[in-house]
Image (tube, rainbow, N blue to C red; front, side, top):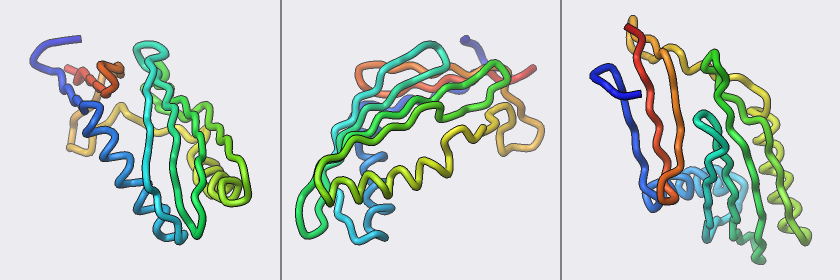
Length: 145
């Protein structure tokens, strides 16, 4: 995929980490939890699929670590779906945090998100590819002619 009808978005490892950490902190704050740290690793599972492995270091009166694994797959009809989402947590606080994450995941797990239409009048997408590059993320979309 390349040419004048291609949109490419690249997020370096640090930028992606900071973006995900900021989003998690905002969600956790509403639950009285402070996210102190994040370790995030992405793996390419194919041209339209990625896996995220994350460890969250959190605090709510005591500290806890929660491990999260999630797979995102984009099918041939350009529907993105979180096909796998798992949480591993030890201890009472970690278990509670894992439960909160699981509740959020239940809202999106298996839900298809259409990528074929951009929020710009008349613009449609012919193909989408995702790749992991140096720990960062690259998303490339070819617009329909």
